[in-house]
Length: 131
Image (cartoon, rainbow, N blue to C red):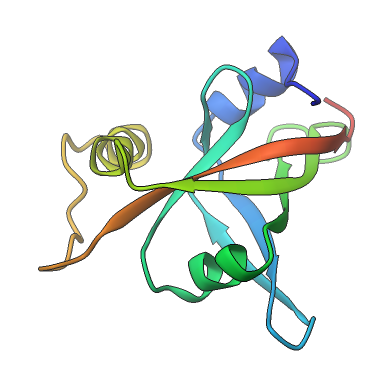
């Protein structure tokens, strides 16, 4: 397993979006800009159960993420390819931490009644870029 360096973690800690790509049933890419963080070793993001990216990852766990540092877009690039690990455990707390990072709010404000959150961890198989 490939792990993140300190410089890569510093980029992820910035308030920037990642573009995450999953594979649709027909093999075509499905890309979404979203909030991102790390667990000290791997990239993580959060979504709701039943959304397209979550359904795609349950069927085919291959995933990629690209982050571009707006302060240094030519060198500050992180690209991660790997496999997704999905869990509901701790996902509500995780989305609240992301809301704190990106919105400065204690709780995620767009939670829907009955929504089940999931945390997706990208177990990196390849990490590249200039960071």
